[in-house]
Each structure stands twice: as C-alpha cells, then as structure tokens.
Length: 424
Image 1 (tube, rainbow, N blue to C red):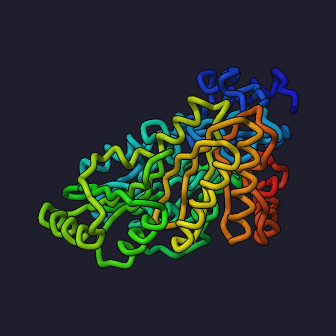
Image 2 (image 1 turned 90 degrees about the horizontal axis):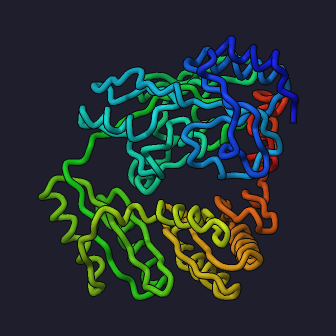
C-alpha cells in the first residue's frame, strides 16, 4: 500500500475542499484491505483532477457510488483511497419530448425514477436497492433486473457517458438522442467493467413510458421440467409480458411469475391468454413483491454472511431445467439448502446455505458443469472464512483484448486493481 503523506492529503484538499476529504473508516474496509482516505469531489472536473493526482502518486483507487455492490467481484489487491461520487448527484437534463435524460453518476436510481415519473416516464430497469444504488454503480456492475426481458440489457438503455480516466482526462461518448452513432461506444465498454477502466461521472439514457397498469400472475409448477415447459410456452406465445421468472424455494414446488404492463382491458386479455397456455396448472394473481425475490436472496446472504454463498448463473433458456436440476443435485450432495430466482433470458441467482467447505465444493461443481456447457458462474457473495474461490471462474478468449484495453486506459492499474476477470 502506498504511503499517503501530509503533503499529498493537502493536495487533495486543495482540489475538493476540506469537506471532500476524510479518513476512511473500518466500515469502509474492502475485504482485508483498509483504505486511508475517502475523497468526495463535487464536480466532474474535481473528480478528474483527484484521480490524476492519485494516479501520479501510484495510489490504488476504489470508485464507489452507494456501496451496495462493493463486495461483488474479486477483492482488489490494493486499496489506498476510495473515490466517491456521492456529491455528483444531479439530474442534468431531462428532455421528456425525446425521452432521454442526462444524470450524474452519484444520483440514486430512486431519485431519478421519481423525477422521471412526473412526466410519465421511467428508466426501464428493475434493480437491487434502488434507494441506495447509484447510476454509476448500476452501470459498473451491469445490474438491470427482470425488466431486461422486454426492454433489453442496460447496455441498450445507455446512449452516452462521460468517464474520468486515470490521467485526468474526461472522455465522452454517445449523445443525447437515441439514434446517435457518432464516436466509440465508450458507454457500452464501461458497462459491467466494475470501475476498472475509468470512473463514470455522468450518463445519458433512453427512457420508456410508465405503464398504465401492471398485473402479476403466478403459476405453480409440479417440478423443474414443467416450469421449463411453461416458461418456453409463454416465450413462444404472442403474450406481451414484461418480465418472466421462476422462483425456487427450498422444499417447495417451483413458482413461475409473469408481469404484464398495459391498460385494464389489455391486462384482462393477457391474463385470459396466459391461463389458456398454462391449464391445468392453477394460476393466481400475485402481489408485486414477488419481483423483490432476487433482492431477498441478497439480503439473506448479507444477514447470514458466514454460512451463505450467492452466485449468478448463465444458461440458455432451453437448458433451464437441466441447469437448475444440477444445482439441486450439487446442493443435496453437499448437504446444503438452495433457493433461487431464474429469469427467462437465462440468468439465475442461486443462494446456497450450509458448511463453508461444502459451499465451496458445491460452487466448484456447479461452475464446472456450467463452463462445460458454455455457461458461467459468477460468485457474488462468499463467506470471508470460506476457502478462496475466484469470483469469475475460467477466463475466456476475450481476456487478452480486455487486458489490452485496460493497459491503454489505465496503464498503472490504478482503478480497482485485481477486481475484474483475469485479475484485471
């Protein structure tokens, strides 16, 4: 860890002011690393100047928004300062007639959605902890949620971005209109990069109208195979659903949830069509909280952090049943309980609970099966005492290209060193 001299701290204060510099507390430790300072610039220019100074001093910089996903990915190998976007929290421009919005990285998602709702619009995402999660954080971790099925991934919704590079450059890409194609797609490159290429300072999004009304229908399946049959039948139909998930609760039958967004007449028509598809499986109208099931898994892992592991699995929708059946077998073989939420587009969040050594063995078995079938397993939470297991798994063929991009944008590995795939 680099030394933070009194002179260097004074230089930081000269950029961001006394209110923008304070010692990092033990609550802000990252893994077993304790950063020395937390820096909170108030403008993009201050953030860029702060980052440049840290880079020149060979400090390891940990970008942070709301801190809700700080534990995702591998722990960084160094952590000297935390660079917070908390004070960059403004909605810069909402062009409601063009259905676009420009917003600073530190603005919370809930704050943005409340402002957009005044004009009957929304950012069409369904993510974790919206009252705390920030725009920069959700882009860095690529968290979009169940609405991705209808509205696409976060990369499809962001149409422009500005990032601060370690050398102090403020780089922008994209524009304020949905069909802008000028320039390099920097905004797509940084989405899901876990803050390893630059610090996001602002983003421009395409928006969608708020739905007139919503309705969720839940269908009980007899087993995983029937859940897949129902899932594929709904996907192959002409239903205009916005989200589709399957919940797996320990010792219970799978439950499939379908979200419709339309007028009252449209909802009634969609509901009748759905019932004709899933007969004779009983159906019922559910409360909206079923869409918080994914967040409940994360909350359970946080509250019982010493005996839980949480992983994100990717698979083809046609492999849904086989994947979840293998998860169940791995859990049973290792005497673990399992709860999961699987999305129709091929992503599942799986919560395993039990002894530490068994958790690692089950995760390794599940990862081996998924990677053998061209899928992946990303470990999002694991107990600190559990034997080490890489968060990302076996790097693919794209790692050399990713390392080359990292070398070009962050040659000194200043930002989140070691956190991303392949030790980037």
